[in-house]
Image (cartoon, rainbow over all chains, first blue to last red; front, side):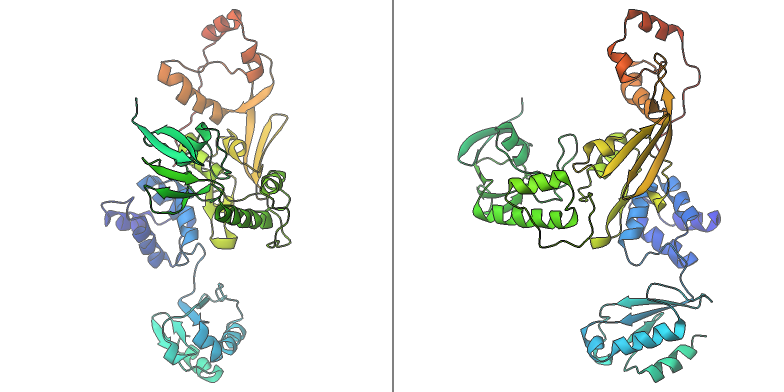
Amino acid sequence: MDVQTVDKILDKFPDTTGNLIAILHEVQNHFNYLPEAELRYIAKKIDIPITQIYSIVHFYNRFTLSPKGKHEISICLGTACHVKGAGKILDELKEKLEINPGDTTEDMNFSLEVVRCIGACSLAPAVVIDEDTYGDLTPKKLTKTLSKYK
Amino acid sequence: MAEMINLTINGKKVQAPRGKTVLEAATDADIYIPTLCYHPALEPEGTCRLCIVEVSGSLRKGIRVSCIQEVKEGLVVETETEEINKHRRLLLELFLGRSPDSPYLIDLAARHGVTSSRFLTGESNDCVLCGRCVRVCRDEIGAYALCFVNRGPDRKVTTDFERLSEYCIGCGSCAQVCPTGAIQVQDRGNERKISTWGQVFAKFKLERCDHCGTPFAPAKYLELINKKAYQPKGLELVDYICPECFKNRDRASEKRKASALRSSVVKWSVPR
C-alpha cells in the first residue's frame, strides 16, 4: 500500500469528510483505480465507515475498483451516433481489442466503456479516447486512430 | 409539553405535538396508512412511497410522503383517495414484480386489492430495498456493517467489498427490522451465520450462557450491550446470561455475578 501518496492527497484537504469525493478522484487519478487497501486506509484516517465509502464508490460510474487501462475509450451510443452506425464501431472495437464494454485489455493498454451522448452529435459516430474526441468514424478510420495509442 | 398542532385526517379532527409526522399522528388516531420502509425505531427515510397521502389546507394541495411530512396547523389529510389508491396499487405491483414470493408482500398487496403484477421478471428476491437493515445497523447499532451498492435495477444490500464483515457484531437487528425476512440469522450449535442476497455476510462463535451453558450470543454483541446498557449506569457486564436464564434468575445468581468478575472483556470498538 502506498501510504505516502494517500497521506499527501489527504493533506490537501482540510475538511476531509466533506471532500471525500474529491479525495477519491485524486486517489483514482493516481492509481488509475481505487485499490481496496488504500480505501480502507482512507476510511480509518478520515473516520468515515468503509461501507459508506464502498457505497459511494459503487454509486458513481466514474469510480472503479478494478485497474483501468492506460487509455480509456468511451464509445458514444447516443441516438445520433446510434443512427450513424455506432453499433458497427462498437463491434469493431470489441473485435479489435477482444474485450466487452466495461473491461480492460490484457496488456492493460485500453479500457472500453459505452456512454450515452457526449454532446458531439455533429461528429457522429464519435469515440472519445482519453481526452480527445474522434468523429465521423468508420471501422477503417478507427483502426488508424487506435494505432496511435499503441 | 410540546405545542399541539390541529389537523384533520380523513375528516377526523386530530391533535399532534409539533414535530410529529403525519404518519405518526394518523397512527396515534388509529388511522391506518400502509408502510414498508417505515419503522418506529428508525429515522424515516421516505423511500418506499407507500405511505403517500393527499394534503390540502395549510399546504399546497398535492401528494406528500406521510412518514417524512411534519404535521402543520390546519392541514387537511386524506389517506385513501382514488388517486392515492391508484398510486399505491401501482407501487405494490412494482414491489410484487420484484418479490412475488414474499408472503409479507403478497399479504400487503392483497389488502389493497393487488393480486398479480405486470412487472414480473422471472426472478424473485425477498429484499425490497427498503433500507431498514442499513439504517438500523448505521444509526442504532453504530456498526456500519451493511450498505447499498450499485444503482437502479442492480441495487443490492451487502457488506464492504461483499465479503464476510469484520464490522458486523452479530446482533441480528437487521433481520429483526426486515419487513420481508430477506435477512436470515441462523444459529447452529455455537455458530451464528447471518446472510442476505444469497451471501453469508457474517459468521460468529456464540458465547455460552454462564448459567445453563447454552450458546446464545456473539461476544461483540455482548460487548455492545455492556457499552450501551451497563456502562452508562456505572455497571460492567461481567456475567453472560441468556434471555431464558435472565427470566429465571434469582438472588443467588446475582451474588454469583458479583463474585465472578470477568477479567477479560472482549474488545469492541466502533468500527470505522
